[in-house]
Image (cartoon, rainbow over all chains, first blue to last red):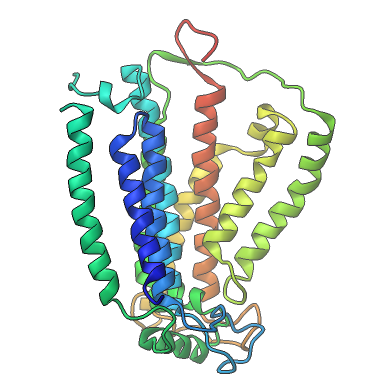
Length: 115
Length: 248
């Protein structure tokens, strides 16, 4: 079962891609993009896990007394979450503008460019 | 392209990508393995600089320059959102009306509000000691302020939250991170290197050299950024209306 968490990450990513491609509403599409991004959290945390490991915070455990999980990928995941949240905010602002200009949030009805 | 054809193309591409991903997963190092060379070195470096929370040490000491890039992304996307959500020519601002709030909602929201704000500030301040830090605590503190919107109404929120001040705070916090990096240069170290300040006693608030300072700058930036983002989205929902329509 040593590959199972990685396969979960791949599954979550593909599910997000399916949602993006078949989306009928732009806000739904932004949500699907967040699902894709959640796959990277699962992958990063799975890569950094160590059997029996605890959080790499030494305010209440003696250094060296217990195995800790990899802090580098945890920091990368934190970066990922922050960037993901702000990009989602930016995309939602774009959706608001698209709805205002074109009167629809259905990506299929946004085919032709308008000046 | 019809929907059917599109789904077919998607299924083909998805199957190919799935096969590649599974092949890649089978080749990755096993889950839960004991050998993490980078992790072990990061823990070692963090303990050598008296930072109890290794993740804070990675973000604000070992990868402090990358965090500068991350802050810039945050700042740029806030700027983009502010520009996108500005009031356009064919829109006008309607004064928000007073709303009635159910008494229990009002009571508990106002009761939890100070506790939530202090919790957010606590998480920022203890970023180098316990789980949390500037990014997480900033979001908690900023969203806690919006309990006022639930407990009272939009007018009460706008009185305690001058958006202009928070926009300036956002810019100042981003600048202070840069200035801290330049201060390291002046002290004779590399840009954002954690060497000019004493490391202090392990597991106390002042430990970790420049880590608590950079952490505080990030906490302020994230808190201001979230307040500004939410303010502009709330403006769209509550205040800005199209010309000629009252329903918005």
